Image 1 (cartoon, rainbow over the protein chains, first blue to last red):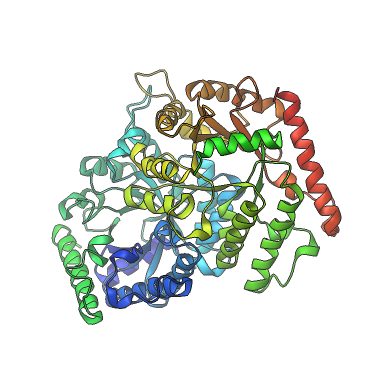
Image 2: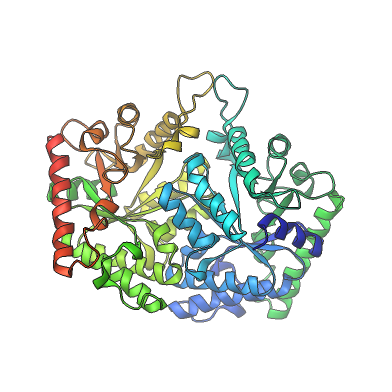
Length: 299
Length: 299
């Protein structure tokens, strides 16, 4: 299978967009027309799956990828996870790459099992194109994921610097004897692991998550991992602006993808919006985001 | 609902054991008698669920808790997660506490969603008594879990020092201007968060994961978090011995739980073992582990 970084770069060029949409089911914020017997397991599953199919249909031609967030599906238990499988499969059938935002990790054979679950080799129901991964357990915990990326043409995005205020509690601490923070150290790890999964685009399938809320740190991190694709969450609802994401990109407009979730699919003017108006609204919001990001990049 | 730490301490006293068993489905290592149409989704689900029911029935009276590992279920996709729900529900129905080993975390509303999924407030299918949680995203990422523990009488175990060799890559790094490592800093965070969820036992529902493979560091960490219950993985298959876990306990034999997985449920002398012999073997292994841990503690 083609290298994930190459598939992503190709999709970014084809869609003329580095924007992705986060899919975070929050039934209490969905338009009322989609709600169907949500007090039953089957109704709940159907509601979440249908909502995402409508979103995907509205925007599949505008963006390279979607990012389902596992926590929001898992809070709905088995019906939620059945809907996650549906959403992953439907997005892929519509030509979108799927980045499963699960922030998984563990050691040894357990990391291998997570890699099989989401990156290839396991049961097909939850297989995506990439997975977000946490680095706290160290280099050897990441190797099984890197192996899976090599073998199955999939990718990972390792948490480097997150968009929350508390990200500083650990990530920003400076290490003794080195003029480096913990996130610098993780960025170096990402760069080093990435050398083994380089695509012909020059980018690696081992990417990084760097929050849009810290532009100065983003510039520094970009420099430490020249071949990594940066996944930038926090655009829109979390306060990041188009200008803030610029340091995550290379000159020329490649090297990062920017994610928005709530600000695209929720925050409706009226929950009694019609299906047609909902799809138009979601599409218009993605077009606006594409234009905003495009205006600050020379893609 | 009663405080999780109190429920766990009560169970440890009743069963006269601080040992727990990890449930990690590996169909390729299961006894052949349990395998049933595993090339079909329904057969796969039934096989995994049945295997765990047999294990639980063998040992429910011997130990306070079981620890299903989510990665090993997720690798089997939807059938695996249906079996996880069955395993969680069955273990609780047999009076065992369930520690979901998912090493979840994220920021803000996403952490809240994970807390609802596993610690109370969400759909009932995946609700356990406690969840393992990763600390890389900082204090504010842990607060939604702490809130859920307060509200629902559940608990978390935060990764402090893991049992893998690569745990040193980040966790052991020394911070500038402080004679402290990153894991020390996380241990202090655990101690501080734990103050708000203290039980009448004196222990907190905010616990920590500390690998059995580093006894010196364990002693130091124990000192930094006097009220935290330590979950010690890595006993048995990962090389930790009964003597190695002693520093995680307080004098008197409380303060930690010790987990073994593969060495209890797999590593069979013969995969063609009968159902009766399998259940006897699993029971004998847990009795042996209980005796080994008991011999080094003054419980």
